[in-house]
Every structure is written in C-alpha cells, then in structure tokens.
Image 1 (cartoon, rainbow, N blue to C red):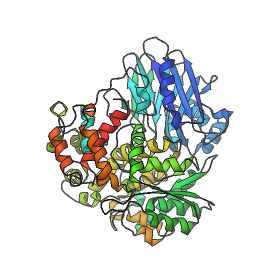
Image 2: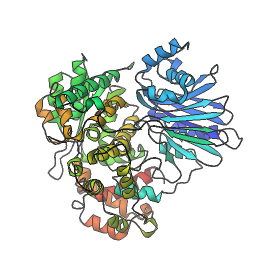
Image 3: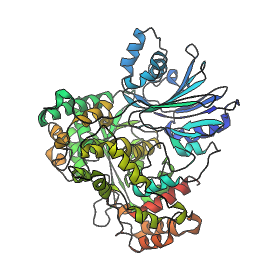
Image 4: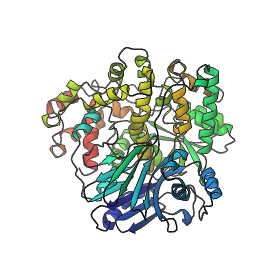
Length: 589
C-alpha cells in the first residue's frame, strides 16, 4: 500500500521533476517508510512506500527493469502474487525480490493488459514502456485503490489523491457544476470519471488507459459485474447458497492474511466485522488484535456499540482495543480528517474511521474491514422498496437521494443551477443490460458506483492518512461475482443480508446476527447542537467562507431547524453544506 504519482509530457519537454516531487511529498502519510523517483525523458514517477508484503529494499519503487524496458509505480496489494510468481517462473522469468510489485512488472511483460483479470487484489498502477514510449494505467475492479488524473494539451499527471495532484500546480480549481449536483443529491457520490473539480478526473474502476508521448489515448473497461445465477445454479436453495458463500468468505479472509506484518480487524460489533473475526479464529488465528470506537451520546442516540464488539472480543479472545471520543475532539480533528479526503464526503463515518485509524496505526500496519456487505447482500432499507415495483428508479430515488431537484435548485445560487444530472445518471444506470430484476439494478448501482465513491473511498482516505492498510474481504472479486449470482429472494428477508446471516450462524452468536442494524455512530454530527452547531454555523455564515455556492435563504432555513432538516438517509442537510465548505477550505480552494 503506497502513494504513487507521475507525469507524461506530450510537448517534447522533459517531465517536471519539481512538480512530481511536490505531489509525492504530499503523499507521505500513505507511504511513511520510503520514497523514490524515476525519470526518463518525458516521463517521471514518484512513490511513497508502506512496507507490507516484502520489507526489503529489493521491492522498493519506482521499480525499473532495464532488461525488459519497463518501470512501475504501484499502490495496493496483490494477494495471489505467489501463484502468479510461480506461473511466471515457469515461463522463464527470474525474480530479484519476494513481493507483489515485481510480479506486476513481469506479469505485464508476459501478458500485457491480459494480466489484469489474473489479479486478485486492490491496485492502481502505472507502467512505462521505454521502447514504445507508452504509459499504461490501470485500476482494480471495484476501485478500492484510487487514481486521479489531470490532463492538458502539454501533459498528463496522476496521483493517488486529488489534494496531492493539486500540489503540482497548473490545474483549474473550478468546481464542476455537474459534480456539485451529484454531491448535493446523490449523497456526496460523484461517479468516475468526474470529480468535484472540473480540472481533475479519476480513472474508472475496472478500466485501463494507455497513452503515448504524443497524447494519443486509448481506454477500455476490463471488468463488469453481471447479475443472475449461472445455469447450474438456478435450482440452488438457501442452505446451498449459504455454504458457497461461507466457503467464499473463508477464501477471501484467508488470502488477505498474506503479509510480512501483523493483520488486525476493525470490529464495529456488527455482523460483517464480527464474521471476519470468527473466520480468522476458525482458521487458527491467535492473539488477533481488534479495534472499536465510540462517541458521546447525543439527541437520545447512543454513540457506541461496545456491547456487541465486547461480546465478539470475549467470544474469540482477541486483544481488544476501545477508543472513546468526546465532542470537543471531534471538532478539533474534523479539519484534519477533511484534509485527508480526496473529495468531500458527508458520511459521519469519516471522522470515526480517521480517529480509529490513528489508534490502530499504533499497533499494526494492516487491518481487515467489513465494507461492502450491505451493497452486495441487500443490507440497506431501500432494497425492499425497490423489489417488484413498477418504477424501481423512482423508488430508489425516493429512498436514497438527499433532495428533489426543485429543492436542489433552491439550495444553490443561480449560476450553479442546471439539469437533474444525478437523477439522469441513476436512471440510465438502471436501464443498462446485465441486471434484469429491479433489486439487482439497485445492487449493481450501489456495488459499482456508490460503494466506490463513499464507503470504499472513505476507508482508503482515512486509513491511509495514518499509513494503515485496510483490506476488505467482502470485495474479493470472486465473492462479489458470487453475490451477484445469488437471487434477491435469498438476500431480502430478515431485514436484509439473509443469506449472509444464515452463513454466519455457523460461527458467531445470534445476539450479533439478529441485532438491529448499526453503523459507526457519530450522533454529534447528526443531531447538530451545542458547540458543534456553533462551529457549523460559522462555517456557513463567515463571509470569508462564502464561495457563492448556496442560497442564503436556504442556509437560514436550515440553521433555523438544524435537527429537523434531515435527508431520507437521516443525514443533516446543514452538515452537507458545511462539509463542502470545510473541505474546500482545508484544500485551499
């Protein structure tokens, strides 16, 4: 797990090493263990390293193989690298290191873009072909690892985060009006290739780009998720699906233990993270470190789930760590958490993950985390609403969108008004082939779009701010493809995730499986009051923070009833506006 950066010039000029050095320096928290640079005419790479797979200098980056004419920067982890290494050795390749980086380099030489479907892992990487003067960029199937791009007529730059890319200069810092529409309607999700800034885009998940020194560019999607059982699976019943799912989980959790350092678990006390602990214990894991976080109760809402996390920790005899955060520390740490965001996110989980990662990083460098299960196995409340209705798009929108288009127009100032961009995006996504059932269309949207630019991005940004690698077993591509084949009738009952709950009963207590659905609760950011409300008001009313985005009438209306203006997902509309202002300020925009 690392931070990567680079530049390819199209104007016959040498790459700007000073700009790449600034970008790479900003990525230092992602890779605190080492740094490296490589340049060759129009191309420059920068890298910050977090040592996980191979702790020796032989796996340092940028990695250059002069014999093959290739150089590489890579962020992520390839879990099946030992198997790929053996396959490459059988083809005659020799290795000088013991990690996954060199496997990527030589695998690309052997198979080109056909390497990508062979990979089981999370990754964003760039490979420079010296002789053809071509740059190859790729991103994993589910976008677990980010890759931001800035392209002009003179050059292409890339980096692991948007704020790092800004450090290179020469980038328009204008907000994208379409992205603003997404942010305020689609729960802060801005689907690739757009970002909140007009001058920066992100590579689509499951896609690659090849671009040469003249600026000629080719892009291709190399993975798509198809829904519906295969022919020999049509007659499977719930116990059979549950057994296949549990076997898939065992494989996904086991392969993510491959590391040269200890691996812990982020334990919320919910079904998903508890199942990870149970599977690791079943596999014989000893002295497993687990970590939980809690916040101050506010608005009659409990701020922790320690009862459940303590139950799992005691059941499996883990080395458990609790972290409790007060309201004042939330306010103190929020600016730093927003500096760590590649794009503004409204989820209250962000500050929880940021502070939890700070604590976890004191104990280990790798953790397993339960993101993705809700999107794969229908754990959210809107899936039953979509099931079997004549207008699944309308049902999804009513349950998920933060506001109707008319309210959006009343929220922004006239220059930011526009069409219902977020609504049209979702409508078109629902109409795509490959998912026949209405629920499957919603699951596909959430698994391939919302998941990428909300929970997954949140976990990457907040953990990597502390040099902590988070691994997400539910997003093992084999498990994701299996989940898409399981019919919705096995997912929707029992409050959702039915098939996963039935599989989990073999390992974890019913008290955790059958409990009400929870999450990382941060009540102080949902029920805005006291010092938090005063701070949010200042963010929105301070003239120095006024960027001409929001209608003052709407701001006054939200401030007059801060606890009553909630989105269908029970988020604060007031916090959503303040969060965007805070992110822009922390990025110097």
